Image (cartoon, rainbow over all chains, first blue to last red; front, side, top):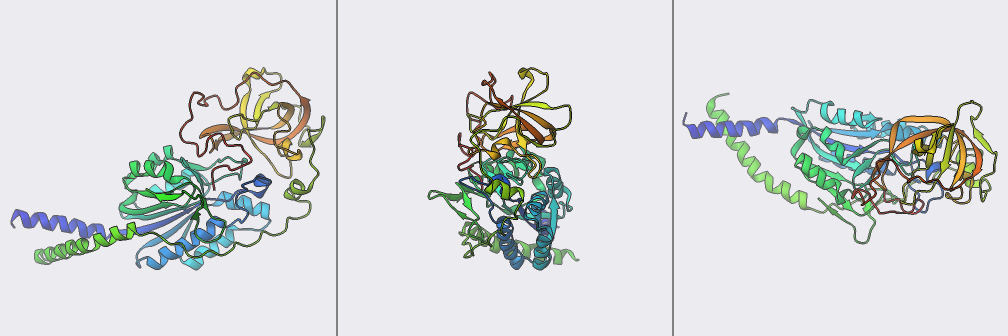
Length: 230
Length: 205
């Protein structure tokens, strides 16, 4: 075999092997604030307990509709936030989330800590075989942090979060090289997107300014000068 | 699979990738249009007698009532707590020290409240800063975790409140508000907003 033919065969063979990998599309959903801790504030968050859940469901349905038969669509949800809001509401929200996941036909993964989330991203599936090809985040955030817990344990603060400094704990090759990533939370485009790109070498779309979940559906930019950026 | 078949598959893969890559780029550049939203459900009525009902409907006081107790306050060991509103706009509550220790050993804390048992004393007041520079006895313990303050991008020790007693107003302490590692000479660059008052827009959603 001539060297050029051997080279092409190896090159295209590798491409075929890569295309044979399965893909996982992930939607990550943070928890709501407690009404007790938000009471009386001018900007009182999460009057509706499923604002992030409903937005996630819309996105999950889009992903499910677009997915190939072998693609895995996974919904990763911060359980502790919904458990605590359930106690306040005196209505168990967890079975409702499980029912939504079942109805959508997606894999539901609960987490209570940052470590559990990172463990799932790194080792939940064999990342040599199954790369993350899509990542969406719905939840509270500032420009440096995804706040899975916000005003739910401590007023106006977070005890479970993923700071930009935590990104290095997530393996770079968990993601496919052309993965589509987006944070629907506030301010992510002002810092988080740049750190994401720097660590994973893939862009993450994020908002300049705030996003608004209060209208139902997927969130929209709420600042007049707001925009999406990478 | 023969060498020839393998080569043909490779060529097909190359052609497929060549044809599909531009499509992926176009998709990435397209603007996503969200579907029209519908109004979220209305929250159920607040149950009479629930912590939220008390918070929303009880008459508020101008200042704390000296000697007032809330929650579990029978244990002999307690902490001494000095309320101070952070002039940097952080969400910490104030300082806490062990009974008998000096204020030099005090820690700046975030308060983890227990609605239904004991909540921050200012919940009973007209404004959240009406107990500024008041002293309290606190019953509770430090949590094994810290809280992240998204306004100032800093970590604050958490005191889990189980009960309190109002001691009274005190002179301002000669301590700097905030955790011991707070950056003082310049903003951290990571907070979502600068020095925003706590009860307006917290810069997150």
